Amino acid sequence: MGLIEKLNLREVKARAKRKLGNRTGNRRMVAEGRTEEAEAKLLKTQDEILDTVAEMRREYGVKRRG
Image 1: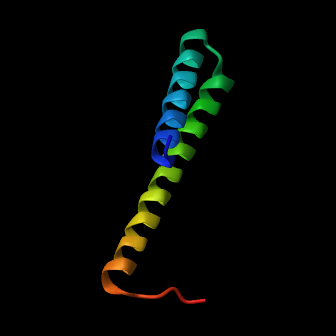
Image 2: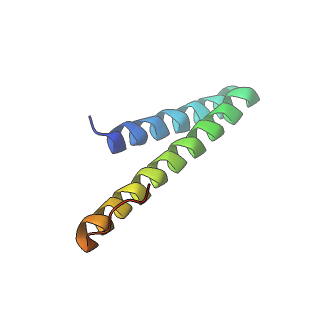
């Protein structure tokens, strides 16, 4: 399972947690679900950005500074 699939699974799990919390009236579970869902989206975005940067470096032959 690749990183994106893991992040998608994490986001789905968080969404399910949030919905379950809504149905049961558990406000803490809803808040945890929202937080986990936002975190999963941020991690997925970060991975996409890093992939794009790596692709651009390969395409244009730019070396990393450091």
